[in-house]
Image 1 (cartoon, rainbow, N blue to C red):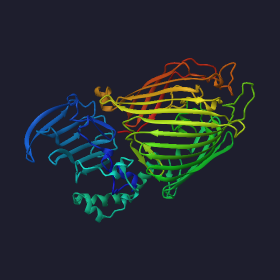
Image 2: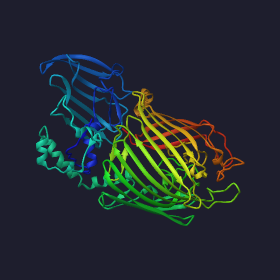
Image 3: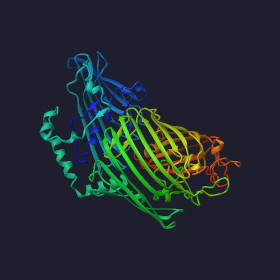
Image 4: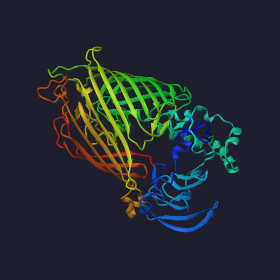
Length: 626
């Protein structure tokens, strides 16, 4: 399928052409023939599902003539509400058993957030006396931000109607359409159309009420209360307080503290899209009261093209980093990581690092990133670089080149001026990284090759929830000091990181050949929804399992007594040739945003010198989901 957006009109929110891709058909495709209808991240069991008798009771209430064809009216009602279900009626053509029309709504009392009311109307028509094709789709949603179903509440109404006209069957598809790379084709000019244009292209004239909506929502933007709410929300979600040309932040890094720096103060700035839609400048300056040292960094991003992405990034920093941390945002320099630290956040390293990268998206779902990095990691009292002969190495330098390939299918991407965010895919997402270290440029640099691959896949298993897999593995070829090995991702905070091991410390395990599995299953209230009291709370169950195995060649194993490694390992760090496992259970959707997990360490449960093992961890996280 291809969707070519020729024009779009957006009122009330920022008129960003990237938002126009979500006003069409593909991103909210309500197809009642599917077994499960995915709307706002909720998978509703369809009344036409192959498994419909598990969820619904059906009643034949009438037979009638519609356009000269005998049609059956069938009403259906859900058997229970422990899973997302609908209620309503469908009209079925008696000769072809095709869906002629449907009127369905979401049942009250479901374990669904933010949506108070949802109605779907669907109409199909027979084209050329041969094919039933959509004629009109309507979707109405009433969103509320309060917990109780009260008449005195703040709500937002969403209404979308799609009309299908000029349907042509069995005609050759134009070559210029077939060769298009993206499922949704859109240009920046889609918003540049006047009212006269819209009057000529709409299949139906707007009603007086619909015409008044445009004026109403535009006037709301000038209300001070709306402007204040918008500023607060955008700052919380984006991290930056934006003026017209400069953003200040991120706010959660303005102040933090750790054992290496003491109290850390940081100020960061970046330009906004009003400054330029082609180039974004960014930088930060930080100071630690304990080490009395200024740090900082900066860089620029230049967009050659945004759809598909063609982007150059240059950056440099002189700052502290946590080697071996996961991709969690709550790592170094973050007030939340300081407050919610488990006490072992002292193993930070000062680095000088310069990066240059170029991302080229060849088509939707296929992209490469070409990158080069110069890095100088300094020894410290918390992370010393000690040779086997007992002498300390002041720093480790490296020059590396990297080629990253990312493959996905039918992935939904939110594109902003400089950033893009994945909303996931029904298919696996593959990434492959090839890196090479170059020797001979610096005093302490190394030649090595690194291969790493990852597969991420979210699989729905309605009605018992969704499983999320992240399987990764890699190999390092060559002799390198331990900061250049794979330092497995620990978590020293009480915040949950789905891509780190909750009960593992930093610098606990290292490998040059490894494989790991991160697995979560979200039951979406399948069990708790059947318990009367729990049903009212709308809590949802989560199961977690994570596994890791890795090995070290003797030339890289700095934990051996007769080691031939370049550096001795920090006290307590070793290989993970004996597999590491942890598992846990959690409750999410507490007050609709909070998640709490209890996680147990299943192997490597005994402490060793230099590493106090944590066999049980409680993690928290905040999630905004429907």
